[in-house]
Length: 409
Image (cartoon, rainbow, N blue to C red):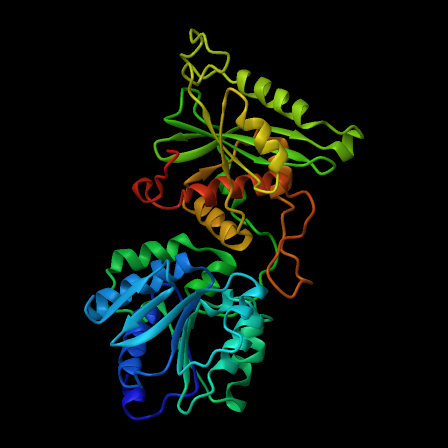
């Protein structure tokens, strides 16, 4: 704020660092004051990877900060009004997003989680800031050091009109000490380095180095809730995991695993569905023997929450016609899903059954691809790992139950 008041801001202004460090809050305060000081007849834009994340992370908070009289917005019209200035709001979730802003001219731009938007969109946005004293304000958490934002902008800050200001968790003195300690415990490995220490470091080695600490046999009695997660494959392996929630902890109860490539016989969707029926019917928790339903842990007419790879369109359609399955397409964001899965294992909210041999085999060989320019797992023997990620990230099991209860719960 002092740099703004004394005219020391740059054309590009990035606030980066750890989670909960206050960078979004102060960036929005700065954005609001700056916009209020700029011409009313010019255009401004706020954007993020998705419109939903922009609303959740920024628009609602900005309205709380300056009041509804000073900032209002419409998601359907994709615009807002900040101190009488028209502000366009946009999502940028793929390279085609740059066409949304081509030809426009903006006095100012705000980008939430800049490392998530496509490189082409970011470059196009900068080219649209062509008025005198035009500025960009952005926030981000660190990523891979080979990320375009690091290589093309942060590392070239001295050659550009670029301000890079770092924020760390411990800088935010408004946070309760207990919360700070809890959030530090929730991250591990590369995610701790990035989201707590604010470092741009490469992901390497085992993706879930804590997997052995997560091994634990599930209770034998009926769970308070069940779910089935599926990674669909024909030539590649088909992996399904049955999960039960006991006292708020999700346990892997049993696995179904079939590789058409290994067995040299492919199965049809119908055969997989029949296998899953038999797979569910074979599990009988303590005290459920008298249940007349073929699937003993379900009540008559009850359906099992089934989270499945969203690309498996034909199999999803088939399961939805079957008796036992309430199908939900999985959230397939790989990196964020891995981060939440690592947190779930690290904090004891996810347990892996040591008797599930295929899952255990995959976990001990599930590693980062160190040759890739971005963060990605080596795509070998990862099918049960994908199935685990679908469960964790779709249900957001690292959050309190009240925070992730969905329409299907």
